[in-house]
Amino acid sequence: MASTDMNNEFAIRPPRQERTRQAWTRILDAGVAIIEEGGYEGFTIAAVCERAKVAPRAIYDRTTSKDALFLAVYEHGLSSIRADEEVFDRPEHWAGLDARTLVVEAVAEVAGIFERHAAFLRPIVLLSGAHPEVYRRGRSYTARTADRFTVVVLGARDQITHSDPESAVRLCFSTVFASLVLRIAYGPGFAAPAVDTEAFTLHLTQTAVRYLFGRE
Image (cartoon, rainbow, N blue to C red; front, side, top):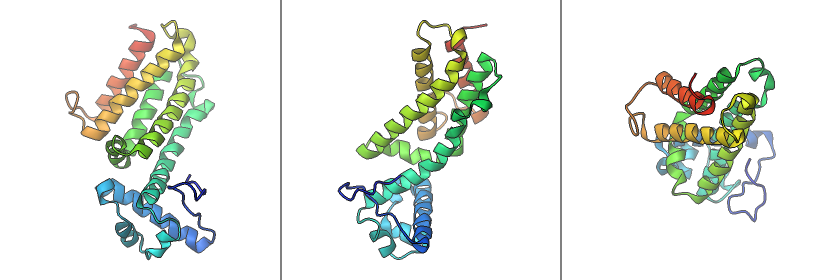
């Protein structure tokens, strides 16, 4: 959510009327589409205005900074990803799974989120190394994702073959996450022979299961 503290250089003045809220939603949706199609390089206030069919004042009433607008769009794009991740907060989704199936399903959920939101995540990942605020927010977001994943997978704590199960699960998540980031940012053939999404996810799940539980 965008900050409303106007001492913050990235703050957004929230719209108060229904008409302006609708226009602001169109602006955010347009911004996400522009990022997906052209990345940060294609993201300009003029391009957003044209796509959202609003006058520039609709944006300048909320902020005067392109970066503030971009970060508001970034948060809007992440909101749908966060909604997908709520599956990790639903105990009933994981209840009754044996240990290996629990890990397979948890890894597959993370991989599925990357796949469904690839068009948005690709330019964001590529930008994060050069944009300190995107990096900071991305790091915080990833930490929250890691926490959710860890809570779920530690449901199999008793069968994890490591002296420190929590550290093992967090390292497992880091490996899975890094593999998905490389694939989404640079393509399926960047660090390994290219395979389709289903095969890649299978490799990830097998890697996670063998690391946490050892070979059967």
